[in-house]
Image 1 (cartoon, rainbow, N blue to C red):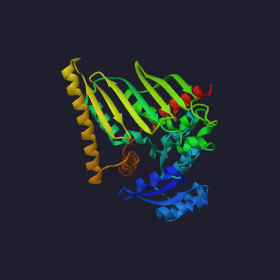
Image 2: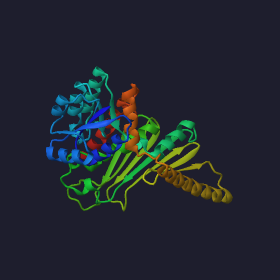
Image 3: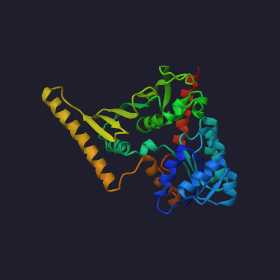
Image 4: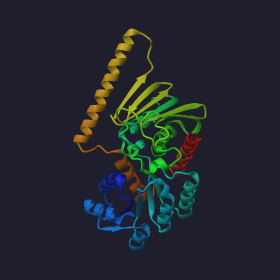
Length: 341
């Protein structure tokens, strides 16, 4: 499987590292409008060819996959160009910034029948995979509500850079990161509608209209909540899922999952419950350490790209359905529009 990567910025390093671990796949070309950057990236990753345009790459190479790692405002034209050249396409999240752009990709994919994958990689982080497994086994019962907190400090590279492209969108820096919590909520709750968006400005950066966000969404009668901040003391991605049988706490960065099952309100049961929570933390940490030592651990991007490559090779469904990715764009677009009011 021959792969071309378009865009040689920060995120491309993660994609290149993941492709290197896919058996039978080889990145044969890089592309960036900054040709010098493409050349240096090609030298670093030992990629044989580099180009300054996707058209130039496609003219010289019939690759199986084009992996798009450029800012999202350029996703649609590049994806359509690659599909029309008969290449399958992998797109860094979000699919696009607007529903109209997303529709262009969806229409082209349906017409040509090629694979289009969207990098919803938090769904493939080990603790989220475990949470999905518990949901599918029925351990949580009916999911009643869910909260996702995604927080970062002020020195986050995108936030602290006044010239970063994310600040040009209606939702500012939030427009870049919101797809992650939204697709998590969609996976556990279902199709989402935006009910309310609240923002605050607490930090020092004049180029940010808001740096705190709370969004409430609904999936029929179920409630979902997103809290995002760029004023936190550290990076953290914390998920709480409220089920009729158990409450689940998921820490993506810490890679822990703690289930709080039904419990009577008695002192002795509370004591045992504390021990049970402590044991689950120890079990998560020891399992993580063993997987790292045995070289079985895979990051979300690594597992997603492995599964996407398999979907291309064996003509299977892509790990993330394109219709789901379109739905995430719609929700994030509405949140951004409400922030701009």
